[in-house]
Length: 378
Image (cartoon, rainbow, N blue to C red; front, side, top):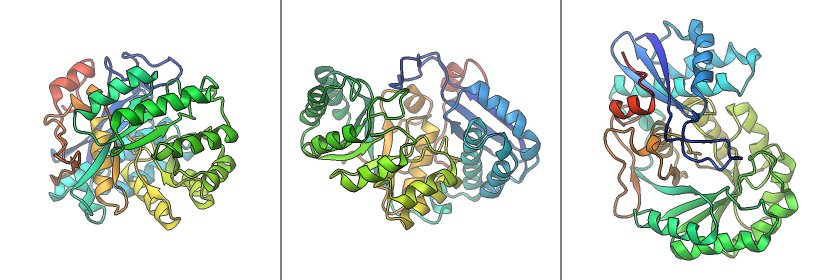
């Protein structure tokens, strides 16, 4: 089975607010879907956390390497793409685009073999997983109301992030936000806090992060995410050793080579690679193995699309200690582009599909709407 063509379609019109410095609007494309089309009629789909113009340019660069390749060998083909393009810049748009190709190739392999991707990764440890509703922070009252609405949908775990937290140099205001969140969701729900330290010109350092971690302990926070700037390795190591709440991060890193020093140094309790950036399922699996070897929990980052979520679910099924997946709430790119709606069960858990490949079907009418009429398949 050979790769005949790869297409990319950017998503526009409903891009969710990202919390970054006011540059993301609904008509800005930050998520692009990719289809790998084979000569035997089986198509696979993937997702990229990158603008469609960059993805299409990357595909032109990569085309001589992937055209005619065996579509049933995702790990080898993806590594071929990485190995032959490193001199153009490891970790940027090419790496992100290879992520989507790799996801799509695993989707094809699953469809061709009649197996879910999680089983092909070595076996399924679970049939369902706990999703945490991921939403941006706000002032205490509107945040609490938003959380109550999301809780009514059946979620039992919640992550609040970015927004006004940590940017006003006001510890009492930060605590008021967290207190409002905890009171809204109740003591029985899991609460995670994402400072958003990868935001442009993040103003806080180690001492702020340590003081904030001490406050978060009082609210039974499950983990403290991106508390520091994304390159502050030594400070992350010190914070993880000193803080009494688990420290998580890693969403901005790409490929296993970038993760290795962080995992070996013990910078995280929980590592959060994003499958739509990091190099795809093949690369994320290697990072998860490395995390296990260093006593660090793997929980994927998932602020992306339905295809990213589907890949995360398959990965979560294949790792025994991955008990959460991220669910970006309120995004049509998660909820509207699938043919069958995501459904939480009575326990607030998300079933992991055992259908072949990624296990989801796309709604191509909705894709045409958000993709400005471009087609993923012929």
